[in-house]
Amino acid sequence: MHSTFERICALVKIRKVRVSAHCYARLVKRGILATEIVAGTDQGAVIEDYPEAHIGPSVLVLQKDAQERPLHVVWGIEKDTTEPAVIVTAYNPDPALWGSDFRSRK
Picture 1 (cartoon, rainbow, N blue to C red):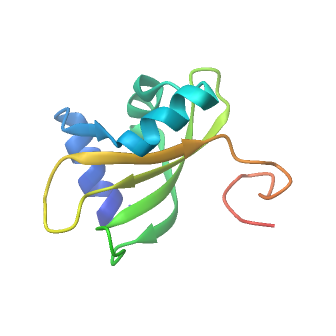
Picture 2 (cartoon, rainbow, N blue to C red):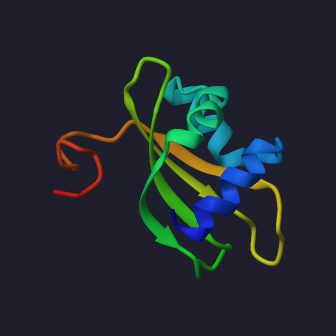
């Protein structure tokens, strides 16, 4: 497991999670529940890791919602902090842009 995602999973387990304001509006528009994102974190698979991102370490993770549909979730930890884990954005990946496993771009 990637160290950024390990840190995020540890924070999720102790309920140190925040949904960014930017993300919240998009989740509502996309019909994605933050509770499903949090619940599915332990089964997530890292697609891309950005340990040196300018906003702080972040990671793109493939997760599933309650209906087992694929979700891409960008998790992060704000620069110069150790908590909370932040849900930056989440979306249902477009099959036209992603491979059948939703882990690699076409």
